Length: 290
Image (tube, rainbow, N blue to C red; front, side, top):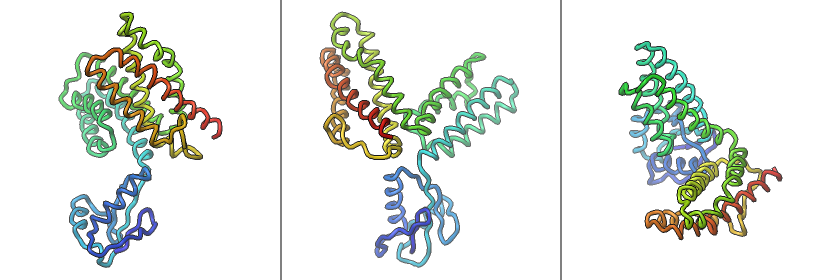
């Protein structure tokens, strides 16, 4: 059996292996390069899911041709998000029209969309998507105007995700500006916790965590968009930097669980703030070089 991905032959041993074994290997390779396999053809014929399952059990050493078509995951998700934003607006207009047929068509459209694209979303994105879709499907639309407000929040949330995919470098620079806005406050977290300003302190810590989540979310496509690799952050190689940041976040989670305000303050000022400052300094340097 000959295997190709996007027209390029994939050389790998086939004796004693199944087609499914090779497909799994190719899927891992596609994922590592930020791609998703969207079609599998056997001897020129596109396979349906049930046909693919049957073919996967066949020996990989038999004669034939397996062709895989892979697309960048970012492109695929960007198209899905564009469609989602259009669907949100169309659904809102349909609900406000008061026409039962339009509302029913919108519910069907959400079901079709979920079937096609739900697998592209993270758990956080999926829960936001499901909350809106479930209310729509059950007819629990609430008072007039409530669904438009929910739709606006949904559009803003996924609009941000779309902007990150379209321009990861610009999104990372925007994240750097967000850090600038809270950097001084991170240094004040210990003092605020000690002087009864807990709400202000915790608000800053939550913003920092959301910023880190945004940074991590953008990172894969940001790294691919750079003309050269980010080798070091604050004197540490990227894997080492990420590992240390992850350890800090774990310690922060434990501090929250134990309601240890002193440790939360120390982590905010002496661990999170300087690590983010080092990272975004490199981001700005990379933007100048690019």
